[in-house]
Length: 169
Figure 1 (cartoon, one colour):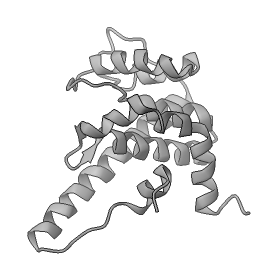
Figure 2 (figure 1 turned 120 degrees about the horizontal axis):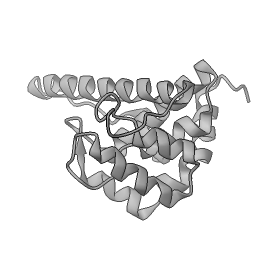
Figure 3 (figure 1 turned 45 degrees about the horizontal axis):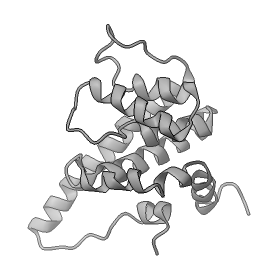
Figure 4 (figure 1 turned 135 degrees about the horizontal axis):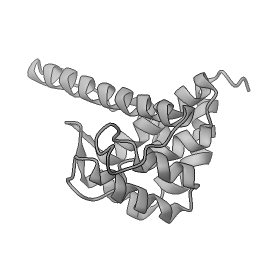
């Protein structure tokens, strides 16, 4: 199968993140709202997918980028400041990820908290930083479109990409 085929990339990504997205504790993030109509679990899947795609484009480490952004908001608090990144980094250690992944998770709110937290450096950090903005933009835009469609009584289906990533049909 060609590596340009989108299903190939989704399968490859699932081999990297599958053990985490199927974890019962991680699935509890579905109960936490994030970026309007998305829950935190969906946001993390979206960000991980964007990070994976950008890592391929910029020749960054696919595994580091996908894992860092899958875990960047892995916390059960309502904190929005940089301090939630410290909690998420501690939670990420539970999955025995590399120190680089933990560093990226801890510093993902840069420039917020820059005097208190040492920022990760390098291509992997910037790829996943852009991925988070991309995922947030996608989710907020989708939510606004959803509101407009709802106002006009038009139904939208769930994101096909998201369903493929979690293995739904």
